[in-house]
Image (cartoon, rainbow, N blue to C red; front, side, top):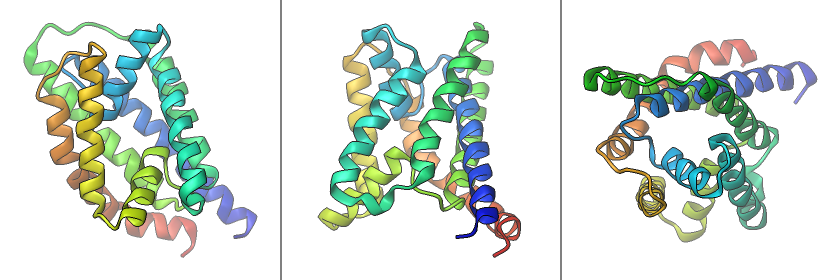
Length: 203
């Protein structure tokens, strides 16, 4: 891979991760629940009195270490940049959090957050510069145990939702909505971005 293409892939990773951070922030602001992984981060953050971004880095570090030992080919530069950018973006934006009383607005903001997150994940994935910590763990375990990606990811999503709940995070329909629709939304955006990103990368 030449330097020019590596720089372009890095731009896609940074932009996609930044967009993911915005999406996570929106789900938090919606205050009706989050996707399963963010729910886990919030639970850890509240118990350890750290920021959501720091909890993200902690969880990502554990996942990356596991993947490094079981299937390191899933990892590359983007695997490190992704959680770092998400953490910085989320922690910066949460300084400007505000309360929303309207239940309709809360739901709309949460849905907007899912859409933005899916867009960011799609852009990041198309960079092909190393999987994110969660995706890398899912793909690694899927390959090792010969299970479908959907089965492994859904199992983790349910586990993270349960742990978040046990850590004191209120449970609602939100994480289950994310479990059902995130994969569909990510695939939708990947299809939409596939051609323009290929042109951007010169492929």
